[in-house]
Image (tube, one colour):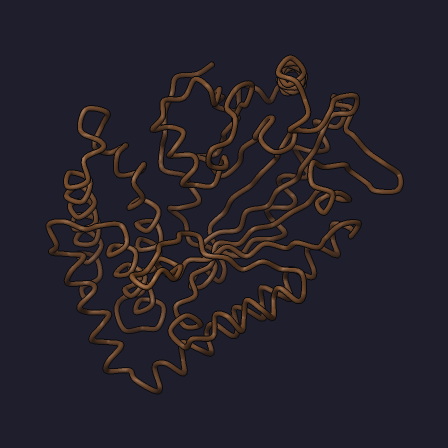
Length: 359
């Protein structure tokens, strides 16, 4: 087991194709081992056997040394929260006999006994379906020479959730949708995608004063729900089409907003930028709202495009566990201290980027 370290994931620091709307693409293959019960009916001893078999397979293929390994039950609470904020592990999930194998600065990882016996995942900035699929499929094919996967001629690869069986292939897209949100088109878009088997849901949720749920930072996750039995290439093609249509609609909404109230939007963007550069304390909700507005401005030409990627990264880096990581164990946990650190970090980061490309 290697020494604990929690570096900022590489996919957060990179921009890729269509990154004005798609912050990241998560490509996932789900696999289970034959002759073992599925989670959650599996016993702890059987979980340990599954973990041992996967580790042995990685070692025999010469892959083990390419990963940093974490035993989830040995992680400090702050480490758990860090991985939860990034979506690497679900919140409040059992920790015993769960393992993470991470490589390429967090762009690629294996999750063992988290939902399914094995989850192979690739994350990249931007819209990268084919690249992600090829990377995870390569690891999958290697592991399949050492592991006996649960497979049915009728159903394909068997997974914990029936609807994910078949190819076991899934994609999740992290999207920034300020145009659709500000044009009040979100419910219509969610309904349209739901009817076609997709779930569009907020990445971060908050509750407003009138007890309504609010999507913080206009950040959303798009997931395909009904892909059972479909071939891998068909899944990739359908997702290319559906996400492509959403990209087009979001950009159309942004353009309409600029045509309708450019001066008002420009004022909001510059006010948000001023607050982020100068505020002494920032709560998470305010930081995400302001960063979203500045990112909208950078993607529509109201402020320099150089702010596009860094504002996306700052949205994740503003989350509580990421802030606490920078503070260190002795200073974490105090709301005022975290608000001060969040503001300090955003001030410093934005001002260093502005120096390259003045607003």
